[in-house]
Length: 413
Image (cartoon, rainbow, N blue to C red; front, side):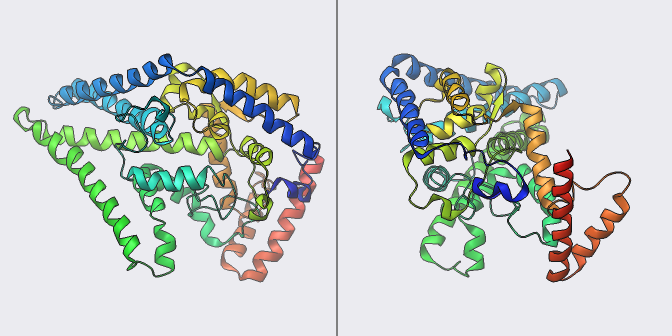
């Protein structure tokens, strides 16, 4: 439900109803203490970690591109494509995302600094930092303020009106996942809003659009012209081209899945704009806690997700070194338990499945999925058809009926 305060409307418990104002502010104090401990301890070992990851990523990329020079030989294609996919994921997730967050600025290394780093993505670092660091992390899961939640193309909450166009949401979500880097670039440009407001001739928009097109041209030239051309002598131009296309798609699908897991699974809360008016630091912390979800798994999984498998910890402390999230996660989880809050964490496959379940559920009218069984499927499909082809009044009346039936099902369960 939009804002935890409204959960009672559907007969669900408000997850923070038991917290007093003093409790919420105390949560903030305890989280501040966890953060300060990491800041006081970070040092040479942390710096060595990020330098080691960058060095490893570059070696994997260089080795993979060398192997792809002979990609006409199928085993070389498989090995090179796998290595290139891994290097692109590392560059995007553990390296680029976290450096651009300023997690390593304290090192004072001009080569590993948020003001100078550029990554292997269609979106220019400057624009991404604004839309992600300044907007998304400030307004986490606030409907109408956090465009990372659904990227402006999806219905992300039951309180948002359902329309027939919502039925295509799973298709839009999949297409966005395949071309994720370009979707992010368009999102950073606020392209949809600019077109809707007919502001495409605005000088500032044109400047930013030129930046994006320049970045895309640079990336495309590298992946789809230069490196395939280097493979011409071995007859591997097309296999190398296919390998680069595949690696970019793999990176896009992986990044999209990780991000969906972080903010979109069942059990993660969303919030109304009015709910953050006059928000205190403690309340901001609690919103990050309720609006994020983790992925449990191995050290290798955490590395490949850019430690966004610790999304809760990342949203609480976006500027702390990513290699420290696993260390502080038990302390954060203990704080959840202390204040009787749900620490939303699942393994990768169940978390992805949960996120996609929500994508599909919200593509349908409220209550439709919950009230549909094998026996009544024909009748439910007939209702869905009437809602999709009917006017607003029809949708409203049938929608109310479905929600009432869903509440009855929930109580019976």
